Length: 53
Image (tube, rainbow, N blue to C red; front, side, top):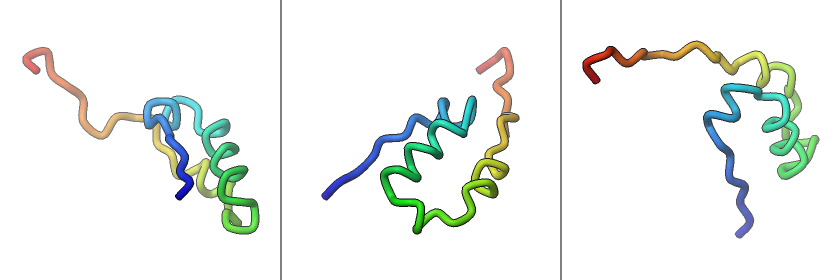
């Protein structure tokens, strides 16, 4: 079985290189909407830690 490891922080920080690696790994014919994938990444945190955490 082949797999690819993806760093979540890298994906959120700059999705283009990570998505390019995914496209290369899976094949362009499987990832038809790369532009939509890139646009779906939201770099704003869903939950910010408070100073008490």
